[in-house]
Length: 223
Figure: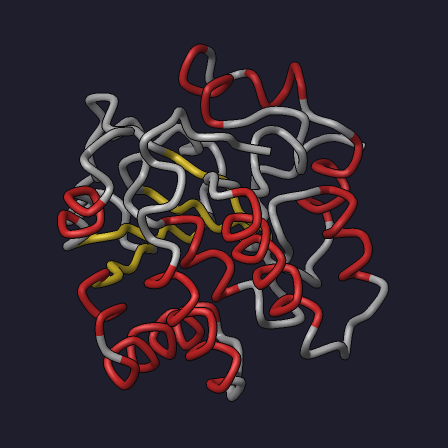
């Protein structure tokens, strides 16, 4: 099986490191049709197609671990596809060279959305011509709260006039429950998914704000 570059289930999220992108992915991951960035957890979720609470439980465990260890924690790295942003930034053929069988399987199926992160302005996943791109905006307050500790020179990409299959997300919305629900609702509309689990969404929003600064005096741990 080869990688299917025609897939329309790939979500690429573009944001500078440390500006809250993983949190938005956890919120999207509440939906049964959106997989986490972790192969084992993604396979578990695929086997439970009607479990509305699983994605929320996965996200909540991240925040619980942050609070328990007093350190930053994410599910990420190359644990879904066999390659990640760092690999693609060095060599945009890394997906061909390093991808695992699960990545090939995901690109050839049409059942679940899956995502990858891009911290550059290079559109690293440009060969996936039907990708959906999510661009974070107005995240400066998060970086400021975290002392800008993870900025590495990359900024958010401007896709106006370049890639028409994209949507911006206003990170200022996280400050207010109603505004945040509206912004997340737009994302699900963009993906063509119905969503009504707003009680889970509000709990995650509160957990994010409560743990916003944890671990950002040390080097980020991505697992």
